[in-house]
Image (cartoon, rainbow, N blue to C red):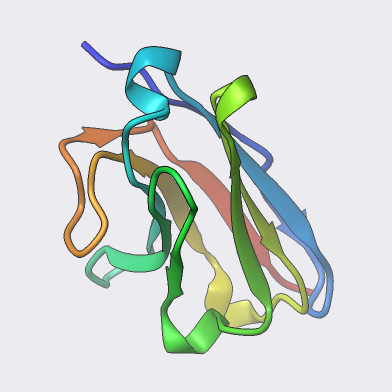
Length: 118
């Protein structure tokens, strides 16, 4: 069983920032693409940002491009999602995913709630 541990969610006002973290087992982390997905109430889970292993090629969903940044540190087995200029429509449960780039991989974190509200 591969355990992914997320942290960093919370309540923030529109225009604010949050930084999500995801820690994964090192032996899986270094060779795996990883990503962040989110699911809002009543909606399907969607890809937010993904990053390859190695040189770290990234891809973002259009609605967050220019506001969110995905990054990883293989030495720390940690992935981050820096979220700036947050909007109410960014409110969702955010999930860390390991093992996929064009499609989600088989391993998921437990999810962390992000709420953007005044």
